[in-house]
Image (tube, rainbow, N blue to C red; front, side):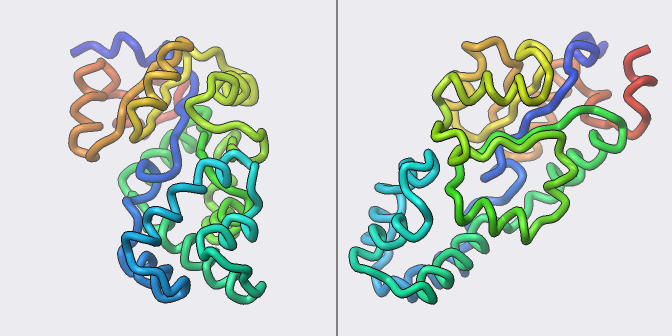
Length: 220
């Protein structure tokens, strides 16, 4: 198939969790269970009940973990929980990380748009210095917004200095993809890497997927 859309894509925008990272690490989840002394169903419920407010900057990291634990925590306990939470989300999806690096080497603009709270964002950035190679990173807590709110997508496009129609946005959640598509972004929902590659090729984006030459060559 001819790559009819490659020239239209000027930037690739990645979700972080379950796109650049793998699904949550079970060993780190077990540490969270031990640290909170909650059973798994109770931790799961508390962890997600307050997560959107944490991602949106309505809660700081310490406030979030106090709510999850259901009791005031010492700073050392909060630090341990944040460390385990960071490990939960830093098992890397190596094929996507490698593709992002190839895009960057070829001169394609890259960005991250992630729903993420303040403490874990700081820890992930410190643990993964290669994130600084992205042209822009939108951490939701900084804007007091979260996907799928339209404003966060538009702010990210503006920061990337690229119109939404020329941005390929990749996310694992259908509601986030639908919101971006409604604003004119090109979108792909990420499920498995094999399905992602199949979709890219079916959409005429094989040369972007297989990029290993300067982008100027691609756009001739």
